[in-house]
Image (cartoon, rainbow, N blue to C red; front, side, top):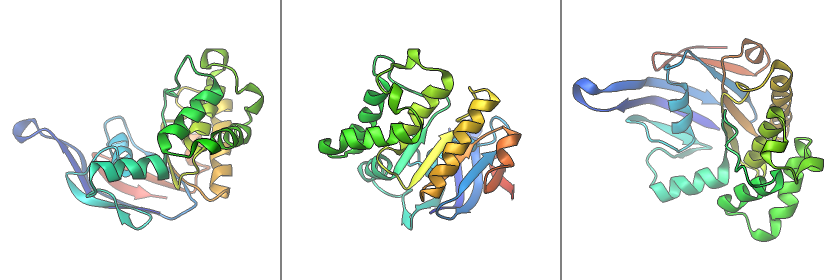
Length: 222
């Protein structure tokens, strides 16, 4: 599903250049839950952004389901990201004045899903994360764990091939974090592929594979 080959990312030039990634390589089969670990500044988020077509590598190539996305035009990369990738952020990134349902529907609009499918897909996603009964609530009326579940529902509603989650449990207590991880395991059973960054040692014991980043290079996997 995902392959990164010799991915290097350099910010700035000359003496000011910062190497966020240095020839990082990984290969993720379809239907796996993968964790990317490493200290702050190791390049985790940069690699996630490149795999998610939010950024381009300075060198190297990234393939999504056999298509090299790193060399595509911006419009084509935008289309792939909207249709085939779901993004989950540490900060939840919900629109505060929209209900849970409206937040998920908004994600479907951005993804280009036909309007006639909004209701069924949004309710299906919210039901999957256990929030169908609270879909009219706004974010400030929901707990942190519930807000993250709304963010997951928004990310999965258009049925993407790949879900990328940047520290999705960092703002949650351990009980809520494990609930989110259970949802991820259920999604993998449904055929999705999930790659997440994390510092949580408990999560690393549960995922299918762990890649470790150190100074922009993947140093081991397990």
